[in-house]
Length: 145
Image 1 (cartoon, helix red, strand yellow):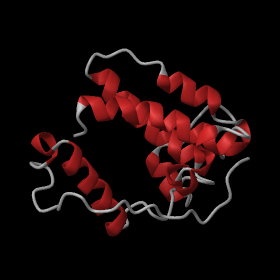
Image 2 (cartoon, rainbow, N blue to C red):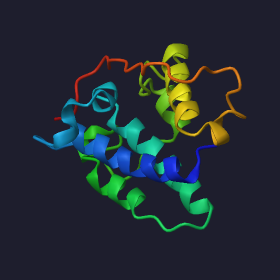
Image 3 (cartoon, helix red, strand yellow):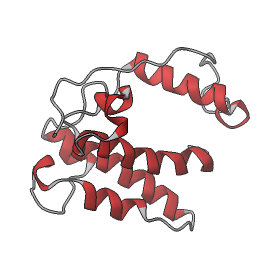
C-alpha cells in the first residue's frame, strides 16, 4: 500500500533505526523512531525485510535486506544466528513492540501519509484527518547497545 517513494525510504530508515539501536554513537540514536524500537531489534529487521520483499516483488533491485541481516548483532535476536523469526513467531514469543496495534500510534502515522501524499493515501484512509501530530511511543525494553 505504501507508494514507491515511501516504500524506498522505509528500507533505508529501517537500517538507520537499527544502527541507532546497535552502533554506539550513531547519529540517529536519539530519534523517537529509534527509541520506540529499543529492545525489538529483531522485529525491526523483520519489518525491514518485509518492506524489502514488497520492494523487490515489483522488480526493483535491493541491497537493504542484506544490510539489515548483516547489521543485526547475533545477540540481538533469539536464534543467535542469521535466521530472523517471522512476524508470527515474534508475536508468539512476545517479541513484538507493545505499540504495534495501538490505535493512536497508527492513526498518527496514517495521518502523516495522508498529509504527505493525499492523492495516493486518501483512498486507503478516507476518514483519517491530515496533519495530526506524530505519536512516538516508548519501548518497554532497553536497546541492544
